[in-house]
Image: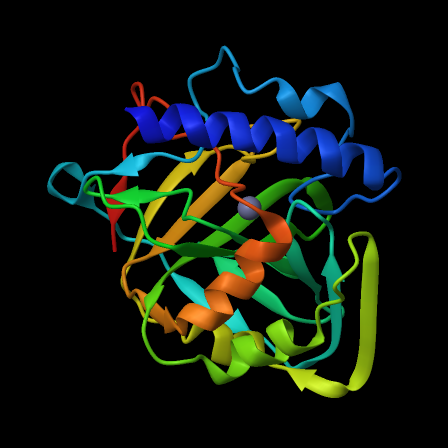
Length: 244
Ligand SMILES: [Zn+2]
């Protein structure tokens, strides 16, 4: 697995550089400690993310998702280690009668989750926190393959600052989480962790089965800004993935 090693090295270097450049920036998936913590890739626990989802081993799921998303102004950040759109308050999602609020969406190049061993060029994470308990997360993972340009993604790609650590606030340009997600009832669900420090194991993961398309140029632009920022896949251990 030569690629894994190369990727891990790039990751460590990228994280070191971004840690120096980004003192006091947080909000990727959780409140982040910057600095050496980024290099600590190992974590001795049994509920870490991402994972390789084996569709043939998934059990039948019976979950219910109800979306109450509304458009937001565009607030697009170049965090160095990721490109992130901060979402305005008021967009919620119900998962099995628990209410979560959409906070932000960001990107990994290549994808963090694998489906049946396949890595995709990009994965978007839509990060929600439980209403009343911001330490409990629900993250929707959307995989992208190369194809046609995504017009909603263009709002993010066209407004992201070139300089790491800067955010471009364009309140009059609307960003639609509904259009970005294009929700379908078909997804994998499992319980896991944040994929960045502190790797907290309080994340309900929904990984969409529908793979979206983005143009090679859109993916390349995001990758040029954030580098290869996918964490290695983690052991599924005794966990169960269900298929909805
Ligand atoms: Zn992420």
